[in-house]
Image (cartoon, rainbow, N blue to C red; front, side):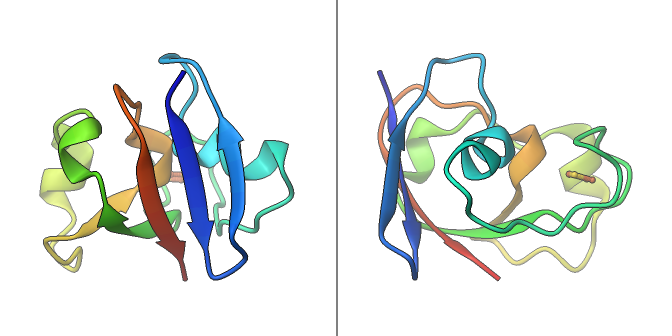
Length: 90
Ligand code: FES
């Protein structure tokens, strides 16, 4: 199963392909800002991908519309994995 490593805490969790990075963070007590419960509406659940960007599904329409996302930033509620990633929470 894909593994997510969260920085700066260093916490690691293995998740299946149906679990989002936001859900993974909540499962192991990593704080990810969100105000919409993972519906893709608040655009607050930003993470920075440090490694493994190609192991995350392509950016969603919602993410493409958020002008202030840097190239390496994603909305964690939109991210499902096919392999290991390292991400930084902000
Ligand atoms: S949790 Fe609101 S957009 Fe991701």
